[in-house]
Image 1 (cartoon, rainbow over the protein chains, first blue to last red):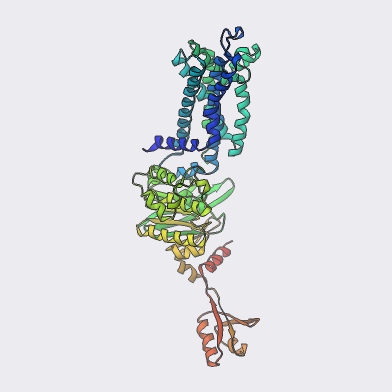
Image 2 (cartoon, one colour):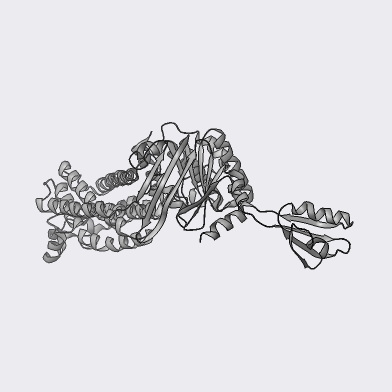
Length: 246
Length: 300
């Protein structure tokens, strides 16, 4: 095996050697569904949720949580470290381009995110009877756009952070507002109208709703797809412009 | 035939001129040293040769290639060791070597290389847990894993203990025996004297001398110094009368004689004639260190 697949596999191995990162990006989202689902009240259909249960709301939120951990914590600190410690520079003296490492890191993150999504959906379905996405194509589209938008933000973070430490710090700082609007503390369905309106225009507020809609069988709303695409375009472009290899 | 030709290379960082018209050429199969004070432009020069930096002026040919335009081809044929060793902390030594081997069309045997640099026992040790010297040796192995025609090694033995240094020098000599051209950036005159066929001395962005180590030493008309402890009384006047002798001083029981020409023969002849036995006789000869100090000091 050579080239990108080999680098991707190496990135995966390195990621698996960081227990804390694996816990937050893979185990925790599934654990979140497990814990919330164990609360009896969260398994009761509620009129305020349009007849849905709390646990139904939290499966898409757990998926966005996995995306956020990979995009704002794992990837930026890895890439900032690669730059700060001269790993990209070292690679620049070999026939492999440093961009390949970036691609490998993204491919690894995407594979990990997909694995976590399957895990979260599996736990939700098997343990608590949460329905699988009834509009799978819309679900996949929402997932890919949400992940792409968040990785664009994470890459800009890695590009702008002067050091690994500041990339980590900035990343963790961003996780709270992003996850707040995705509904980690208060699901979108029970957010006050104003807050939900703001949430519509955040990458994972739009993302969580798109996943929610597709789970129910509807196509994600154009507004939410457009919001995620806009984040992807703006932050992707900025990241591409600011990223330095040294 | 030269494999590296650097002609009037110039590079500045903002206002600061790092390389100010460096020219030299490296012949195929030789070990070529680049020495000079910190900030003299050594690293910038080799980074331009490796294609990591774009020169502001001058021309560089490496194996007939332009390091910027023919970057891909160059990187297959030139191995580089950078000043700071750089791998992710959680990558194992063996994994790193296997991974880097996969980048090249005709790589060396990673297991064999690991053995050559004495890291076989650390194949499964993570990079972050290797000692400074082990990291350095791994970094040398990485520079060689692509079976390069030219190996550019920056600060080869910095941070190595004396044994590891000697082992590394032996390794570099073996590498050269396989026809690899080696460019060595170093601070250590001992290293340059031991390994290099020719040495370029760079000071403040300019080449002040390119010569064999012996040639550089010969350029410096350094004073010789002889010290000994006379075992019977000795009249200093006998020594000062010699044309070769410049000065005679005493420190405790020791006599220190400085001078030029065939100083040793002149002094020992006088001592023998007067039946003075010289105990603890020592001669300080000009070394590459002296040559370096003279060459770099002169132009600063």
